[in-house]
Each structure stands twice: as C-alpha cells, then as structure tokens.
Length: 451
Ligand code: ATP
Ligand code: MG
Image 1: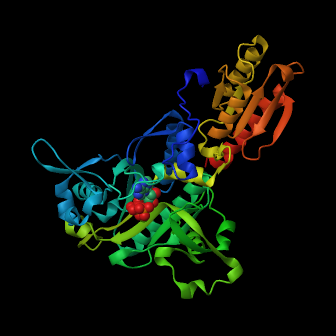
Image 2: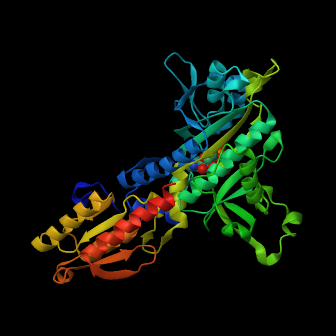
Image 3: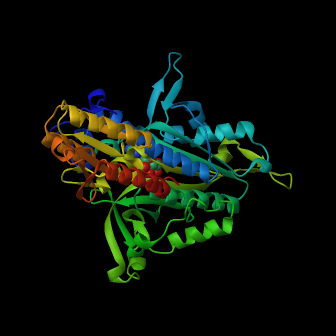
C-alpha cells in the first residue's frame, strides 16, 4: 500500500480525554474514531489489526472443533423472556421497539438465541458434542465506557457455545476451549494467564478469565510467577484426546491465579513470597460452564442412549477481539508509539523513501516494494514528500515490525537501512541483504505464529 493512496489520519496529539496509552496511541495512529460514548468507527489501520485478531481467534476455534455461524445483532425480547433474563439484565441492555411496537434488543450476548437454534434442530445425543460460535458486535450500555475500545458500549465478541449430553462431556468441551484460548493468545503474541473466576449461582470450578498483565488493567491479579514459564501446546495438539487435553488444563490450573474478586488470602499465603506475582491485568477472555441454566427453561433437550430426554449441558466462551487490540497496545508500546506483535501487525514493513521525487530513490523504492510484495510481505510504502523526521516518527508511532529506510546517500553504494521496531536496532545493509532478511523473517514468523 502506498501511503499517498491510503487513509491514515494520524493526530499530532492525543485528545485530552484519552487517559491510557492504548487509547492515546490508537487515536494518534488513526486506528479508531469515537462516534459517541463507547462507540467507535474502525479506520483502515485499526480495522486491519482487528481482522487479524479475529482471524487467529477463528482459526483456533475451528481447530478445537467449534463451528462458525452468524447470529443477528438484534434479538427478540420474547426469547429473553423464556430464560427470565429480559427483566434481570438491567440497564446494560439496549431495549428497542420496532414499528409494530414489538420489544427487541441489541444483543449483549447470545445464550438464548443459540439455545433456540439448538432446540430447533438437535434432538439426539448422536449429534453431540456440538460447539457453535460467532464473531459479532455486541452492545452493553456500560455505566462507565472508558479507555477507548477497551471498555466500549459497542464491541466485538467471539462467543462460542458448547452442547453436551452430560457433565463429563461438558467438562471435556470446556477443556478444549481452555486449550484453544491458550493457543489463541500465544499466536496473538501475548501472555494471557487463566485465572479462576466466579461461577455465580451455578457453583463449581468451571469458570476462568484470561488476563493480560498491564499496569493499567482494571483487575488486580494475584498469581504464581511460574506462569511466565509455562509452554503452550503446539498446533498439532490432539483435541480428540480428552485425557491429553485435561492434562494440559491441569498443568495450567495447578498454580495459584486469581483476580481480586476471587482472591483468597489464606491460599495466597501458601505461595512462597518470592514466587508471588501481584500485578494488574486486563480481562480478554472468559469461559464458563453453566449446565442446564438455559436449556432447562427453554426446553433444549436431547434423547440419550437410554431413550430418555435430558436438558442439554451447556457452556459459553467469550473473547473480545476489539478489547484485545487495545490490550495488545497496552502491553506493547514505548514512548514513541506502538510495537505490534508480528502476528497482528497491520503491515509487515514500513518502506521509507527519504527523498520522494528523486529519480534514483524512487526507482529503488519501487523495486523493493515490488520484490517484497511478491514475496508475500505486506508493505506500507511512505511515498509522501514529507520530511525524514516526520516519516520516522510516523513509522515508530504505527509500530510495524520493520522499517526499511532508503535514501540517495546510501543508494550510491547500494545500501539501505533496516530497523527493527521492537529493539530499535538499525543496520546498514545491501538492498539484496535487506530483501533476503525480510523474506526469511516473514517465512519464519509465519511458522511461529501462523499455527
Ligand atoms: P468486564 O468484567 O470487563 O465488564 P464481562 O465479564 O462483563 O467483562 P464477558 O461477558 O465475560 O465480559 O464477555 C466476554 C469478553 O468480551 C470479555 O472477556 C472481554 O474480552 C469482552 N468484553 C466484555 N465487555 C466489553 C466491553 N465493554 N468492551 C470491550 N470488550 C468487552
Ligand atoms: Mg467476564
């Protein structure tokens, strides 16, 4: 993409209302625009990252056996009356009436609707296990929308719903999603720690929140320092092997890890002091087993092998891709701007032409742009006639993994500069060496993050 043909409305300064780094940087880098409180447009650069996050989430859901659907944003209040949640949900739910004065709502979540889909089509245990998910916008009229897309009112959620014949099978389904979340966050280039979460009135131990550590996180977290050393299963992990999957979950849930909501001082005191990690974190995912809470009142039953009908056992599994984008910025930035993980960076390389309009420099840049694009790299080519300082600042702000800096002076000896955004290291190399290094990096990073 040539910058002169792109739409990248960067801001010199962050608007005053942006309190935390991710919100400031996403506004400055022209990723999002606020339309009203907690409601945002995604501009091209932001949308690219959001779509990449979404795609990784999707691939890991598919790998774990979940099947994608797409449910509408607008739902009928009648469905929610069946579960009893229409009255319980409170002011966070945006209630709407259509022209026939029928009560509708903008979905804050989809348990009722997915249960309705299930009960319409599935009648026998033979069709289980089943896990259906979608990636769709939600609306929750948050009391205090803040921090940009971190806590929005309209936000994107991947929500999956599992259906099983009995509690054991439902537990296995829950474990598969747990492992799929480990892989998802690993591919997103970030450490997310699963923490024991409140199961509310249902009880049991089957709810976990996944948190990314960051100083500005809204939750206080208490966890064993070991979590940073644990390994994540690779793409070949066999999701059909219940014992294997349970073993991975056991390992990841053996150490103490809780947010302030579930914190237990007595248990915490058993963790040696030099292994205690007390920090702040951002909730990016939440998984939950709730048995027959919805299937029972809504009549979602399956016939078991013994010929008897039983309410289906369910679980739900959420990740907020729009919040994840902000969390990645919160976890990856410096004083000059964003530092994207390779797997979700909006472009791989920023190609910086230091003297646009100069024939030799333009020709060299055009050639490198063509070569890199042909090798499959996504290049943002700064072909504007701006000054070098401004181009460097922009490149640092938007945080692409690499900057390829090309100017007439270096070209005299066939040389360009290659800068790695994360480390800040700059090397002067030949044009061929730069192309080779970037191409090799691209192949390698696909191997590492491509799953
Ligand atoms: P929180 O405790 O942060 O309000 P929640 O527990 O209400 O979130 P869930 O119902 O568990 O959220 O939703 C699943 C996921 O959706 C969350 O883990 C988060 O990633 C995302 N999410 C929830 N609320 C918002 C929001 N207001 N803005 C952006 N993402 C959100
Ligand atoms: Mg939650």
